[in-house]
Amino acid sequence: MIEHLKKLGLTELEARCYIALNEKPDQTGYEVAKMLGASRSNVYAALKTMHQKGICQSAEGSSTTYSAISIDDFIAKQKLEFRESAIFLKRAIQNREKKQYRVFNTEGFDSVMSIVKRSIARAHHHVLVQIAKADITYFLPTLEYIQTEGIQVTLQTDEQLATTLQHVTLHPLNHGAIRTFTIIIDHRKIITGSLDEHVIPSAVESVHPALVTQAIQSFKYIQLLEQLKIKDPDFITAWHQSDIMS
Image (cartoon, rainbow, N blue to C red; front, side):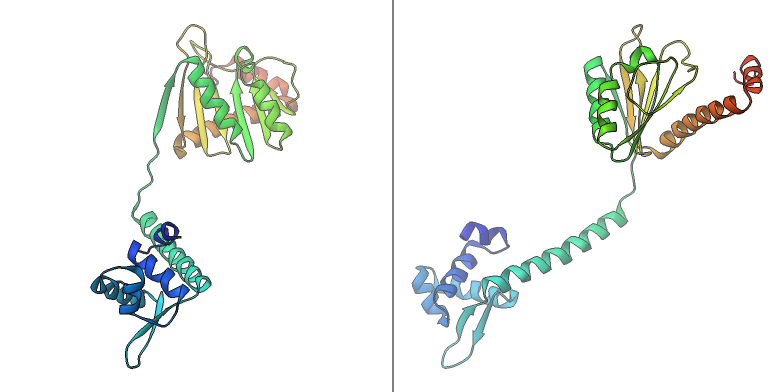
């Protein structure tokens, strides 16, 4: 019991005094000290502190006696004080903090796969994926699984593929010299990198709003082009052949 009372904010002597007063209320400081085999001066100091904390009550008479408050009252008091302190500290620290958006770099196929799968598995609402068919096979089983768990997955890729994903957009992806991929988790986190066989697999991971917003805009841009293609294919064909897209 003593160790648990110490976790609730009592010193070891205060905890021993509390237990003694619970076992036998209305004791004087001398009686408590005798019961515990402790120094009277130390016990009187502990009882004074406990009284100030509201953990024990005193009654004046020919001599001052002490009684501990009930364990229910003690726990309720500690809960209330903890809650008040937690709320105050949370607000105070949050008001002083400046948000820092770090960018994490990862190299190596296994490390990249670990980051991607871990992030996808922690999605709550939706995952947006822009990736070449040559690389999607690494992530496809995980994406198909989270879809069965109620997460909306939207995939943009460059070739037709067999998948149970319900939202797939085919579009030529302009990767440049190497194939790249971009994954957006819940519109708040981005992972972008490359699994191209000509380079060391690597990825950048961040929740920086600027990076996430830019990736989302690119994603929406392709979705819009595909919608326009359905409505006016001649216009989009001409657009692709012009320098506007370069």
